[in-house]
Image (cartoon, rainbow, N blue to C red; front, side, top):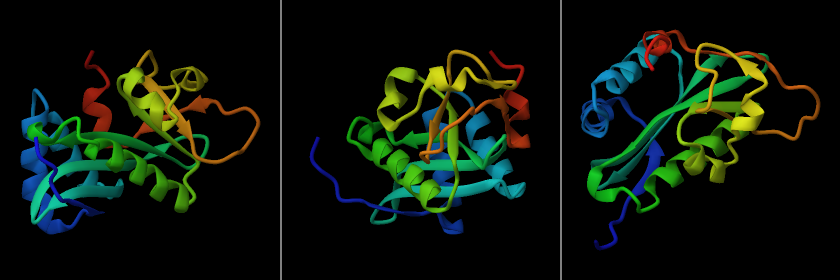
Length: 169
C-alpha cells in the first residue's frame, strides 16, 4: 500500500457523519458510534481527534471525562479505516490524545483494551488493579500522565454513556 498524506486535527462538527460511518464500519455493532454521540450530548467528550486526508476521515479517537480519585479521562473508542490499519494512524491519534490530556492537566487516562497493544503507550493492567469499578478486570488499564508518587487507587466510573456496556461481557 502506498503512503497517503494525512493530517491530525481536532474533531469538528462537520466530521460527525464521517466519524459515525467510520465507527459503524470498525466495530461489530453500532454501540461505539452511539456511545460517541451520547458522550457529546452529555458534554463528556473532552478530546476528539481525527486523521484527515483531504476531507476523508481515516481515523478517530475520543477521550471522555471520568469520575475518579483524580482528574481522569477514558480513552476510546479509537478506530482507523480498514485500508489504513497498521499504518501508524491509530498510534498517532492515541499519542496525540495523551499529549493533549497531559497539556491540559489531566492526571490519568483509563481504557479497556488489549494490553499487548496499549502497553507501548504507557498503559498498565497492573496499575489499574488498584482501581475498582464496573469495568475492573483484565482489560482495564491506566496510564499516569504525571510523576506524582503515592497511593493511586479507588473507584473509577466512566461517563454515564458507558452504563449500557456495564453488563456486557
